[in-house]
Amino acid sequence: MKKYTTELKWGIIFSLVTLLWMYFEKAMGWHGEKIDQHAAMTNFFAIIAIAVYVFALLDKRKRDFGGRMTWIQGFVSGVIISIIVAILSPLTQWITHTYISPEYFDNVIDYSIEAGYYDNEVDARAHFNLQAYILQSAVGAFIMGVVTSAIVAIFVRKN
View: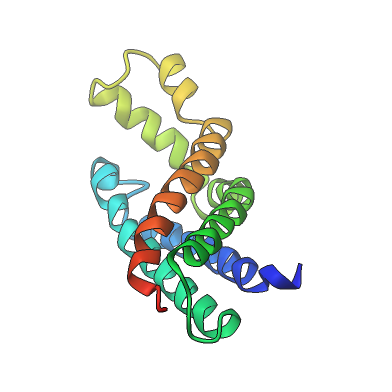
């Protein structure tokens, strides 16, 4: 387990950063009165997510590989971080929708019906609920983490 201490640390950091971003989104009104902007504005989190992976892999290179790291070492480290983030994502979703923004689902359901994305509340609720978001976030965290790891590892490798 000690071999993966750096990955565990950065998986936890990523999850905490995600929670801070959720708080920021709520503070900006993207979970409430400006929910129409949410779909576009939430994409800016990608910049922060990439930065966290860059810092994580640079830390891994320095601490665990003596300043040298191949692409495959960086990629594997990033994949492990992605697995940790995916494992923690149900907890981050639960914290987000229980404490940070408990009104989010009601607001997004109302908006999606008003905007014509869904015809009725039943269909909207089938898409916008904690169980669906937990699944989407776990799968999304893993897939996007693997892709990000593959790309970031190219730039932080040092032979």
